[in-house]
Amino acid sequence: QVQLVQSGGGLVQPGGSLRLSCAASGSIFSSSVMGWYRQAPGKQREWVATISSGGITNYADSVKGRFTISRDNAKNTVYLQMNSLKPEDTAVYYCKLSNSRLGRPYDYWGQGTQVTVSS
Image (cartoon, rainbow, N blue to C red; front, top):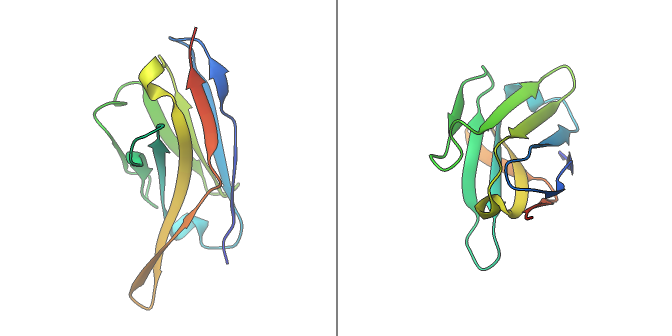
């Protein structure tokens, strides 16, 4: 069983920055794909960014150039640095760990953390 514990988030003014963290338990972190997703009120959860076990990153167009995903395998932690925040970035943010065992994929999710961008 893997547990993902998120931290960070909160209230920030437009144009500000926040950093989210997601710490994983267990020993599979370094071989896992890690991702960040978000869900705004009344909307479906959407993908934000992913980072592969080898450090390859991908971003949704809406956050490209403003958000940076990174990982520290020694700390079993993935980060999401969010800069130039906009009101439309307001959402609950979730981290996700993806891996597979015997060819079967599986995911674990963090508990979610609120990010509110408002003046």
